[in-house]
Length: 447
Image (tube, rainbow, N blue to C red; front, side, top):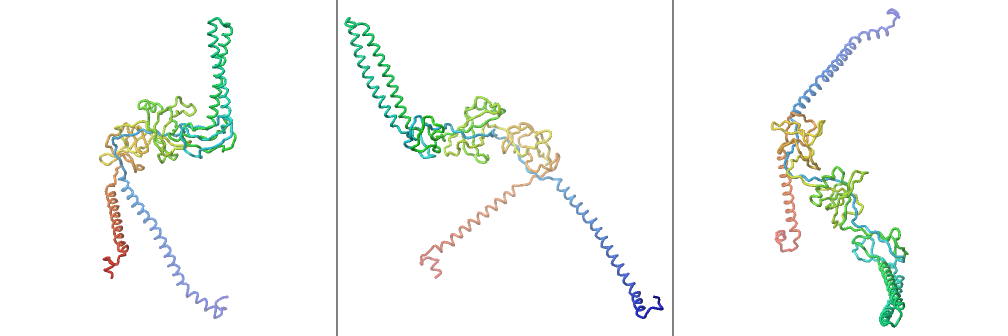
């Protein structure tokens, strides 16, 4: 369709589109330029702003890293206890399984389970009547044989007088002598039977052989028991004193044995299984006679009074054996020691507030301190905290903790004063409330 054949409406639409095309293109150009400008600004912001912050941060880090704050301690002269921490078990000094020594029925039980008994106390009674009857029988036999022996002795004396007078034969006198000797043997046999019967009667009364604590009863009254019965009747354990058996490695044996010979005894402390609480203090006097080849250790026994019975048989404990005390030793805190490729060393603070590494030879150590045998002098300052970023020649600073401690003390005193004033004020305010007398000054004023 051309211009000539187009209708009036088509020509109007075409002319309207041609007249509106230039403003639309202008708006698109402005939007495009705005987008380009916005992208350029974002690129500039991303390039310049983070770079400046990073640079500033690096300068700040460099400035902070030039002086490293650390905590220090001063090497000093003091006493150092040499303590070996071992592993041990509580073992009673005396542990007795009470077993019957005669046969019979249990007639009575005189103790309570868990009761503390003394040496010589009667624990149980086995029916003694059969043994008392046997004892009476043997005593009767003994009395009869003694009477026969006395009669034979009288006859023997008569025969000896007659043989001197040649009034009887020598064979008769000799036979009478043998009769006396035979009856003497019979009497001794009867006396042995009596003693044996007396022992059986005594064994019917089961006696505590030592002071201690009685355990759980195995058999009750009325049960029949036999001599040497397996399992016994109960177990009697001596609680006071009590011992701890522990082992010492053979590389520590020489030092321990030397000080034990010199002093005669060593002090040992028993700590609980967590090694956090001391249970008792005792002494060590006994050292085993040989080393256990399977473990390379030697056993020792510590004796504890155990008055409060905090040590219980078969309890696992951690013995702390005090071998000796080093006097005038150079001490530093244990956390000041560092380990490097060449061995142990410390960071020492010099007078110009820089640090240097100093190799040290370490002696005895414990949870708090270490003995320095070589490398440091009395009064040297060593770094105890903040060593992770230290290098030789690093400049360090030591924070002043005295002012903080002073402020803390002042704050505590101020708080205590406030509490006292509050308490006093509360008492004074409570006083009129507790007065019920109408003639009191407070009530008078109110009225």
